Image (cartoon, rainbow, N blue to C red; front, side, top):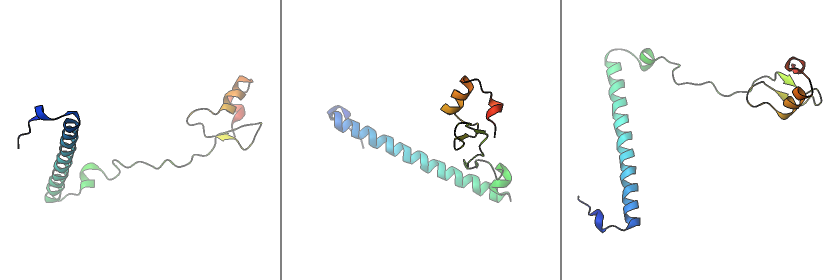
Length: 106
C-alpha cells in the first residue's frame, strides 16, 4: 500500500500523519500487553506470583487524605494550616507582625 504523499494537500497530509501516529500508538500498546502476558506466564511457570517478584506494595500510593492542622490564626480561630504546601496569607502576615512560628502552633 504505497501512498504518493506528493499528491496530498496540507489537510490530507495532516490527516495521514495523525492516523499513522494513532496506529503507532495502538501497536505500542498491543506490544506492551503481549510482553506483560509473557512476563506473567514466565513468572507463573516458575511457581511465583507477580507480588513475590516485584513486591505487593510497589506502585501503590497512599491517598492524599487530610492532615491534622498544626497552626491556628490567633485573630480567627477558624483559620488553620497543616504546615504543608504554600503558607497562607494570615500566617505570613502574623510572621511579619513579629509572631514566631511556635506562637501559632495549636
